[in-house]
Image 1 (cartoon, rainbow, N blue to C red):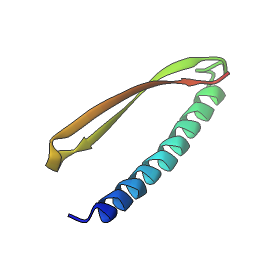
Image 2: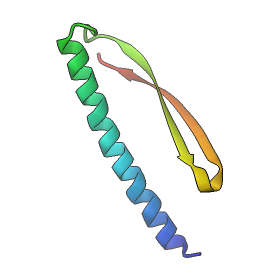
Image 3: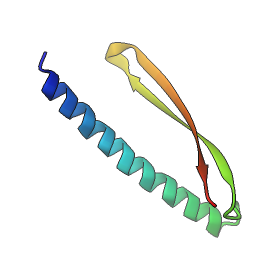
Length: 68
């Protein structure tokens, strides 16, 4: 196994996930604000699940998103 190749591919994957997740969340929040579903001062629970089927890996991360 090439540790450097693994590390670089993990970092690339996580960067893609981070950027695309942020864009998706921002888009959903803006739409919810426009639709009146959010007031703009909410704190919302959030979850992210990381799955790598070949490794039988399934890890859930919990956090929160604050609008104010």
